[in-house]
Length: 563
Image 1 (cartoon, helix red, strand yellow):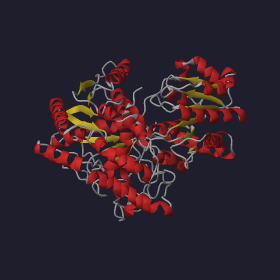
Image 2 (cartoon, one colour):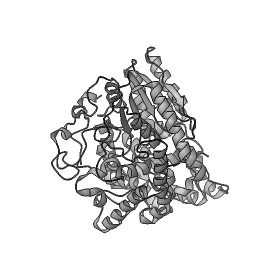
Image 3 (cartoon, helix red, strand yellow):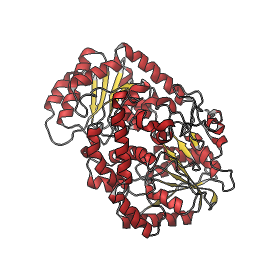
């Protein structure tokens, strides 16, 4: 199986924390751009793993739909293949309007980040304990994640990117927080660019919250701490933040690479800032389902989740729809296409499911694939009676499980806690059981509990699974009194998501900036958010040093982008 999707998901989550912490808690200041570029020309520069750039693809599709006069170019890698996705969204948009210009794709000659990392690390290299114990295993790998290529490969990719920018001459470049080489190319060519990110705003902006609260209030990366960090966890949380910052600033490998790249002609290479005061930050986060913040910068636009419309499940699998409609409630067990169950996890999950089937009338849909060679006769015989009577369906691969989640026919989703899955479940109004394994997922599990839409069974044994604990978690979200409260909260958040226009908001933000004569990209009047966000602290209570914020930081409105 391919581990690339999971490796890149882990990498993206890690960078979401590390790049915003380094080198200080002050936002960076970007030199004002001087090259305007061609009007109505946009260049996306991203990695090619489409699972991790769904927001970029969705925003591009909305841009094609709404602004056929804009030409989109896209620079990325050949593996994993992103070009078919771009052809599809171009064709879908052209079917509605033949004047739409298809996305022009440029394939870089270098290996993608996911390819390089998958050559050195396997899926199970990232399974760790949470907290300080897991840090000791993961921080040494961080250096390779931040700089996967050697200096010569980095320079070659940088030069190819610069040439693409000069050939396309875009009015605006759209970046993710990865790969960093694209950021270097945009800054070194003095081009206008914007950052489009689906990462949680608490990861991106924790460093600029009042009173240095990233250390004592907001959970450190992979800490698994509650929010706000409880008193007994404050010192470990501070130490974890310090260790993460030290790894990115004092790394001999990274500092050596930076020195070499400087001598090769790259100005300020591997700058880990991603929050510049004068660079637009277009966010796909949902503040109502995230940790509350006290300060939101004026260059921020909150669009809400940016997604493509799923294919109706009735079109994908009518027979499965009939099965789902026949049950009073359905639980989906889906950990992603890259996930496989080893012998021990097969046993524990099977036992927990068996207990649930005996105690309730729930129906279960489980995507199950084995890791390695072992007999699963025990697993098969245990669940066989329930397979025969239709109470559980076990498949090696499900057709578009995300469409299932969005269909309204799934009551509970059991998954491993990627940020993407958490937000997809929130968007669909589905309760969650999160069983984290990889180090980036522990904070997501805590977040689901904090927001009130899910549970994390097995905190005391993670990353080892326990069947009794899993069963208890299943019961908590399926049948216990708290399940009704959890479903009301999930349904409320689904309604909140509907108030955001997601990809269309992002497309509008990109479109007006893709005109070389447009007003300044950091115009505070363009800031979009939701001033009635429940649980979010007063917008104007304090800036990054606790001072009163400028009034412009509190200009938030979703009315222009409401559906």
